[in-house]
Length: 140
Image 1 (cartoon, rainbow, N blue to C red):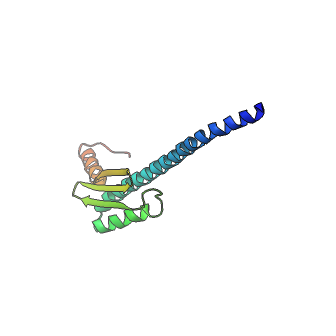
Image 2 (tube, rainbow, N blue to C red):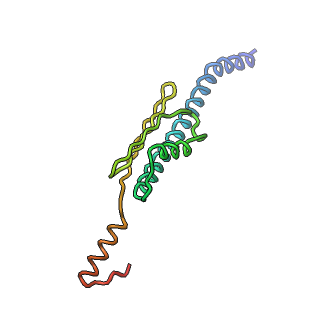
Image 3 (cartoon, rainbow, N blue to C red):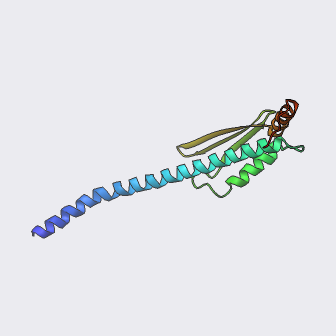
């Protein structure tokens, strides 16, 4: 008789604990999906901003549509939780701005990455001209 009483109490306790354990496990999985997608979107936005700033220096340049296409290709098929994202890019003479907004149920992600358009070749040439003008030889 006592053995059956212990089994019954164990069953009742587990009937309360198992749903709580499953709920916590599912929330952990959802949290992992959220941070995975956030990292994917963050890295894709950064990569697009850097590619846009480096291509903007070239003679042909890059358009916003090309940058949006590049960004969509980097994201396509990688996100688990956020299947659709709103992408906006803007290019100015000095910087490239990439913004991504994604929303699913109660979860939202907003990412903004900027990259300055630099011209390192011009700085190197100017520095070498100054060094030669001052009579110093640059051994870079």
